[in-house]
Length: 480
Image (tube, rainbow, N blue to C red; front, side, top):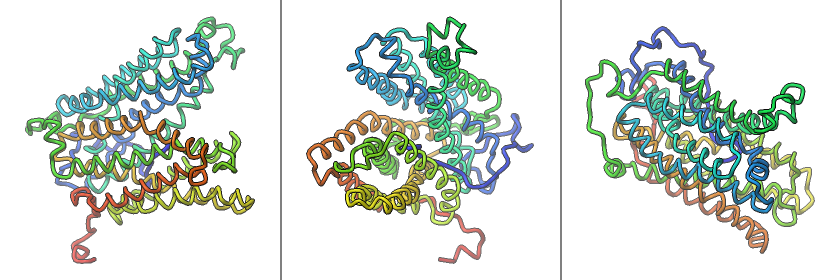
C-alpha cells in the first residue's frame, strides 16, 4: 500500500536490554513453554535496524535515478523511463529468484550468518551504484543488490523466534514501523545528498570526486548505513534458529519446499497474503495518477504539493493505526479478526475514495476537503492487514525451523506481484480515464470487486492462523 505501507507498536517499552538479554544468553524460541516471557526489545530494535537497510537502499535512488540515467548513460529523454523501469524491475526480479534459496539457507545454517552476509553484499553493491558511468554498470550493481536480498527473510524469521504468541503483535509493529521509516528516509537522503558539489558548493565544491561522480555521496551514505548494520548484527544480534542455539540438542530434518506448501493451511495463508499484497500494490499504482488526473476525467486534480501532502497523511495515518491500535486490537479480536475487519473495510474504502471525485464534479469543494482527508485517515487502518498476515504466516508454520523458507515463499510471491501489478493497474486506470469507462472509475470498480473477493476468501482462514487471544486467567476461559 504505497504511501508508506504497513506499521507499528503500542507500548512505550524502554529500548534498553535487560540483564537477561546479554550476548551470552540463550535466544528465545517461539515454542518456548514460558509464553509470558517478556519481549527482548533490545534484540528487536537491533533487528529493526538491520531491516531498515533494504527500503533505504531501494528508495534512495528514486530522486536522482532518471537524471543519472540521462547524464551518465547518455540516454535520450524519451528512453529514460524505459531504463528507469528496467533498473528497478531487475532488483525485484532478482529478489524473487533468490528469496527461497536465502530462506532455506537461513533454516539450515542459521539466521545470523545469512543476515550478516546479506547486509555486507547489499552495502557494497549499493555504495558502488553511485559510481556507475554506464547503463550496464547501473543494472549490474542493482542486480547484485537484489542478489543479497536475504535480509528481510532472516529478520522476519528472527523477530518471530524472539517473540511469543502474546508479544508477536508488538514485535511486528516495530518491524513494520522500521520499514516505513526506511521508505521515508531513503528518498529524503537521495534528494538531499545527490549532486553535492552543486547543492553545497562551500562544502563539496572543491572536491573533484563529487564533480566526476555527482551521485556517489547518497549511495556511499546508504552503503555506510548497511555496513554499520552488518557490523552491529555480527557482534550483537543473537542466533535464534533452534538447532543453532548453544545448548540445543534438537535436530530436525529440513522440510522440502513442496512438503511445506502441502502442510495443513500453509498454501491458503500464502494465498491470502499474496491477495492482500495485490490489493495494496494496485492501490499504490493508482493513487498518484488518480490524485493528479483532472476532476472532469475522474481524479482529484491535485498539484504536486497537494499530492505530497495526501501521501504524507496516508503514511502517517497508517503508522498511527499500527503503532497505537494494532497490538491492543490483536489481543482483543485475534489475528483472524483483524484480517476479516480490514478485508470488510477495504471495498467500502475504495468506493468512498473514488466517490470523493463526485463531490468535486458537483462543485462541493468545501465538503470534499472535510470528507477526503477523513476517509484517507480512517481507511488507512486497512494497513493493519499486512502485519496480521505476517502473524498468520508465523502461526501456520509447521515448525520454527521452517520460518525462513516460509517467509521466503511469501516474499517471493510478493516480489512477483510487485513486478506486474503496478503496470497493470496503472494501465487499467489510464484506459478507464481515456475512454471514460464507468465515468473514469474503471480501476476503482475492479479494486472494489477484488477487495470483496478477499473478504469472501477470509472465510477459509485456517484455525491455526486465527491467532486468537489467550484468556487472561482461568475464570475467563469459560467466558464468551
